[in-house]
Image (cartoon, rainbow, N blue to C red; front, side, top):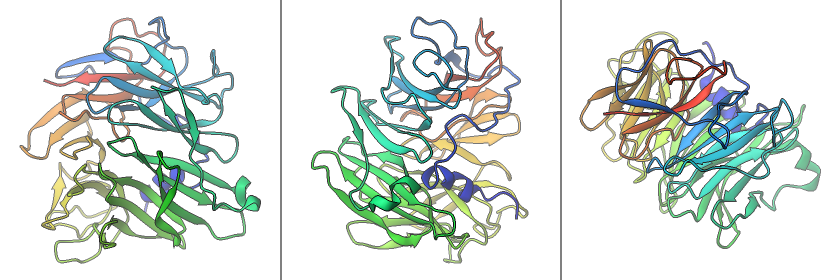
Length: 386
């Protein structure tokens, strides 16, 4: 069957055992074809980093970029550390997020750039939210975790609502010899209370999660007994749950799928799948392919050429970054227009596209994208696309 991408992406939401930036990254090999590229990752004084940066997310308006920098370095003493920074691209000011000096990563940034979500800790990291306006650092952790399970439980911040009031997060318990248990919760940052969205027992592993701008619709993948069960969207107002990785006639996909983005209005979902039966032109063979689905009409669409997976999308799920053999391409789902982000090998993470689709943040170790890049390590860049 090949690599289980849904299970691989679920590792961040379940065990969270690998820090941001420990996976291998292909080096970029060519200059961009369109627009302008600017390096984002740097020291506070603007000089280049000496350790790798990656995992970038951008605010909806493109002003703020959150990214991780691997230690050892000042303020990030361990080689297994990934410290989190937020850069204001308008002023150039850079801020290190407190509490990120240990094993960490898996970033989220709110639409306005005020809140930053991340994980940090030793062994089984915990999810935190940092408020850049008030300076408050808050652990996002349920009261329901039994004391004897604390050391075997980890968590991850999945999404932040548009009004900065709600945080979607996943808690996973795993101890060798015992069943895995995952649950998804919604933390109200005003009241401090949690609402269970996906109950424990529904899934051994929740393969990524995300919600609409108002938190009504929640998307998540389910793995149970080491078998992929499907990608679902739950309407929290009606209680209805819909499987989305199906053919138009409702036939379930014949392989696993992985969430990329649920739109702000909860109507459209972008996902990757290895299924061969979702559309008449779904490619055969063990290959990841990008799809978009209209949850109101049921229409499902294959994106790009066979074998081109989706890496990221804007919060409205209109602009999708596709990984293609010759680089990253931005596809406008409304017009069908395709624009080059960068030629050669590079990578993006979720929430790497601005709302208007004009800017994309990505990671590359290519030394020729901007002048003076001589550090020999991956950097975070932003591409402005015309």
